[in-house]
Image (cartoon, rainbow, N blue to C red):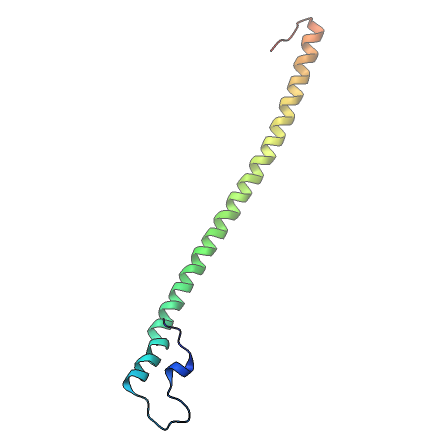
Length: 99
């Protein structure tokens, strides 16, 4: 769409001339038609749907990441506990643990 100033679209106020075909064509170029508005509304609706789907997907990913983090913390704690037990057992049995 063209961005024209009002003074470029209409003849000067102090003249009594009528709008020319060229003036009317310029005005029509900057005025949205009903079809334009419907098309824009459809595009906005589609964008809203896409944003909603992305939001739901991000929420699911965030939940999955939180669950994985909790699982990691639990697993790390268990691993640390098992390592402590192995060291205690090795000490009691008299085995030297090496890397």
